[in-house]
Image (cartoon, rainbow, N blue to C red; front, side, top):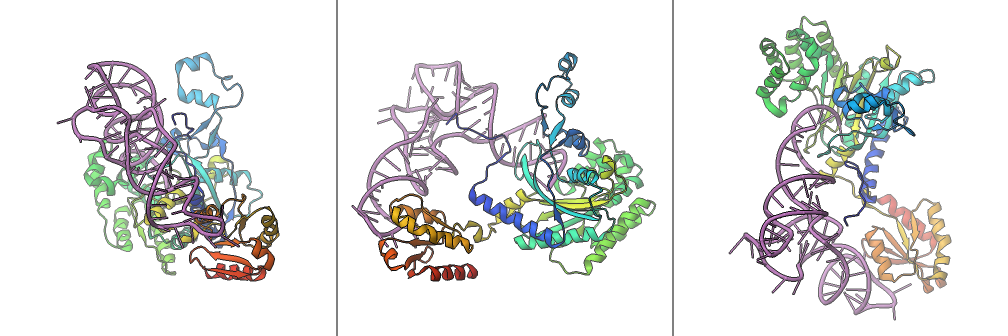
Length: 459
RNA sequence: GUGGGUGUAGCUCAGUAGGUUAGAGCGUCAGAUUGUGGUUCUGAAGGUCGUGGGUUCGAGACCCAUCAUCCACCCCA
């Protein structure tokens, strides 16, 4: 017991049932992505650290898993470096690779590297794990899957709208009620500009993002701690009190931001998106939320966040527009916008709500009971026949007691059990038992296939 | 990185003010039922009480350390 093997903190194994449910989520998301014309790509688990560092802010850098160089990894490290224990400097010398932190930055790297092969606008999706050296807690893992859809090489706000449609489709398919919150980085910049502290943009956004959680007074205190003078905080306050419909809020904020060109542009963008959205009726409510500031610091336009309405969970999806992410890799002037679905959090929400479809529990369709060597040999070609028409079938490998084989079928959630003993071999009629109803009948192979296929359709 | 909770059987937990051989339910295995599972009945296996130290005549329980895990903050999917 004490010597039982373990896996690293924040990492998880997945059982067959969990995999079935995870695949249900992945399949749903992938099929929606495909339906909107997105194409899949994959990138390696590891990127050069130089591609990753500095893209996620200071916090992000700390959360990167770094991979030790191969071979004599201390080769470049001087005694002085080791003595001084300057972790950052040392890390840069002994590690040049890291595990990816998200899918967007590797994608930007991919686009720059393959720019000559890509037809723009490029719509890609990517479903892969990412790693963060965070301290695990509810809904937070050190290895988790992101399902990203991005459009790169177009400034059109139709892309933002498309991502909202995709969000609506995915969560409708999964049966989760969600709301989309939308904001625009330009509006936030405009606010910082208007109150006279454009340099404090990040501090301001991080603080007001917490409004819901910690309340107005605490937000003001945090702003003050971050060095924002009182007069600026007073100017900011009305913005935190906005109310009414999306249009009303936009009208109010417009008055405040009149003098900021950037801010006005942000308002225009949001308005355009809402106008497009009016053309199509979707189930998911989309609301302007000026306190929405989450998101990586590479966002420049729209910021999107999706929250589950019936479950206690942080955001289950998030995204936004980044105008110059490829610029960092040497390809300026290419705008992108994307959204990331957090598969693991979606799993937790579905689990909490008990909304996984029953089909995710289903096992093999047919199990053939093994009565002995002769009977098994007789069954083998029949089982292959079933498999060839797409029916999942298996033969119990050992000549165990019936009771044991039936119990196995039961716990594996097998739908049908076929009994082929001496009598069946003689008559050619197999005994089929439906495990749910307990009903049994004798049929030949052709009729068995027809019966199974008919049953499959009715499910 | 900061703060808090919890570690007893495969799982969920009980274990009363420190006192003999540490319990339950579920699960597992075997049997009742040698061609019938999911219900029932009977029986069995399974624990160095996370680990190391300390207090005590005596520690699963109290103290310290350590590890693991969960939750919250930070940040985020």
